[in-house]
Image (cartoon, rainbow, N blue to C red; front, side):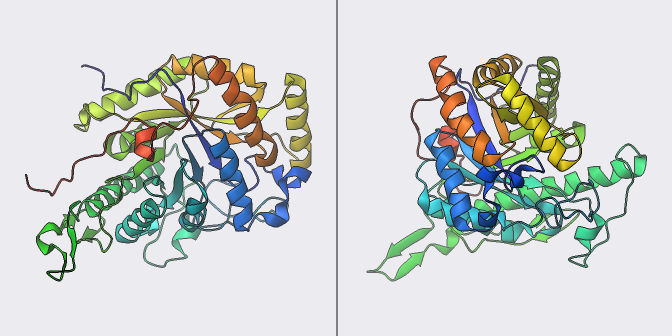
Length: 403
């Protein structure tokens, strides 16, 4: 079996994952975090502006359909951690006109959100940002989130290791794959030249270039066409976080980027190989798919300072911070070494999760990025006008257009 191609470049791609005041649960208690500003447009605008100054490929905005929780599958009663979020898609749309180059990738929950709504929301974001939109698709296995909508029940599972849990997760990820397929078809339901806008003849659109998608899946059916013309990128970038074979399969079937969580180069190599094999099984062997490694980062000028800061935040939180992703504590030089080691295992980029936005995001842009540039491992300027362009992904042909 020949390996599936990845986007070819010796340069690393960097994304930053934004959530609240940072990924450590006590981050809001840091003076630099200004928690009173958390639900203002200015808070998010400043973060994205800092990321853009660092030439970051894109930022992701976390979102969900229930309050954040210290428990994976149910609410908690904690009052000492950030709770509540702004809508990720609307936040990205608000920030888009304030930026020029950086990609904007909000999170959407496929489980309880209609593909038609998501397709036009992300297409609109692509227009507002002039071609810099993407989405991060995720599922919801929380019964309390299903109760917000009243259309389906999600059974409670105690552990993901049980056969019942695996059956539920597989079903939810299969639904997410169908969801993305419907969204992608809706983006293509208008041909690129469907809008004529000819005042002299009075023809605004060519109705023959709008197409019914007639999607029929196990979970929903969508007629189409969209109400929004084909986005500037043709297909905005689709991404997903994946930790095991079932979500790896979603990445292989439908995503342009998969975020994965290896803790060393050996794990990274095995994950990349599995995703490439799943790509081939899905008939996408010829399509480039990025595999980004996720890391939580505590960055300081001295490793001892970073470790002490993490310990202090853990003490405020009342427990050691744990994550699905590897937690890096150290200097920009040490992080650059690690990123290049993981890149050699087949990763094409990284999505960094700042432990404290106000501290670790500037450390990424002002210390890590210059170090990578010194090594000729990261761009020195934005070289494309669209997110697909930054990622080395071509603009895809419309599946419904006739020759």
